[in-house]
Image (tube, rainbow, N blue to C red; front, side, top):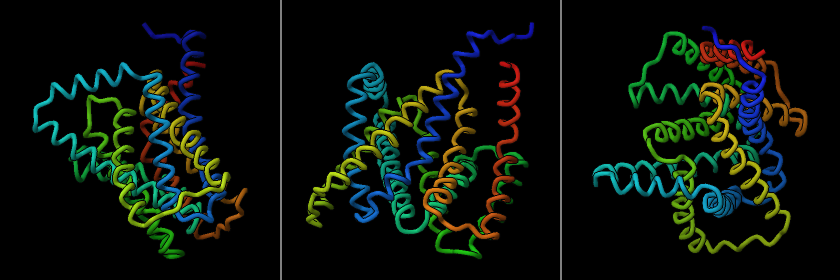
Length: 311
C-alpha cells in the first residue's frame, strides 16, 4: 500500500528541513562578523574563536546532553586498549585538521577573498568523496567520477585567473574533507561530544603558543562581541541545528542543504562586500555547479520525489 503523507507528518518533517536549511544559511553569513575584525591577526581570531566555542559547547552539553556523555563514557570503557589508542589518535588528527581548516578559512575571508572561501565549500563534498575513495576504498560511481573530473576543469579554469586564490580554496576544502573522512571512521560516539573534545585539544595546543608569543588579550569590545557571535551564532547553533535535522530527515537531505552555504557566501561577497567577478570566474562557477548537480543527481531526485509526495 502506498504511503500517503498526512498534514501532521508533512508539518513535522518541515521543521527538520528548515533546521537543515537555517544551519547552512547561517554559515553562509559568517564572513560578515569576520570582516568586522579584519584588523586583528587571523591567528588571534582563531585562538579566541576556539576558546569561546569550547566554553559554549561544554556548557551546552552540560545543560542538555548529559545522557549522551554518559553513553559515550560507557562505550569508551568497553573498548579494547588498541581501539582506545586508535580513537585517541583519530580524534587528535581531526583536531589538527579542524584547527587548520578554521585558520585557513578565517585568513582567506579577511586577506584573500570571500569568494575563495565560498568556492572551497562548493568543491569540498567532491573532495571528501574522492578522499573516501582513495583512503577508505569507498565505492565511486561513474557519474560521480565524471562530476569530479568536471569540477577539476572548473578549478583549472579558475587557476588560470588566480592561482593564489585557488590554492587557498583547495587548501581549505582539503583540510575539511580529510576531517570529514576521519569523522566517518569515528563511529558509535556522539558527534557533538567528539567536537567538544577536539576543540579542547585545540585549546591545549594553543595555550603554549600564546604564552610563548606573549600575545596580549584584546580589550576592544568590538572584537569580543564578534568572537561571541562567531562562536555562538555561527558555530554552536548551526551544528546543533544540523544534528537536530538528522532526527527527522535523511543525511542526504541535510547534505544537499549544505550547498546553500557557499551560494549565500558568494551573494554576500558580491552584493555586500562588492567583490568583482569576471567572465572567466562566472564560467568556472557555472561548470562547477554542473559538476555539483551531477554529483548529487541521485540524491536530488530522491529529495524532489519526497517533496512532491508531501505536497
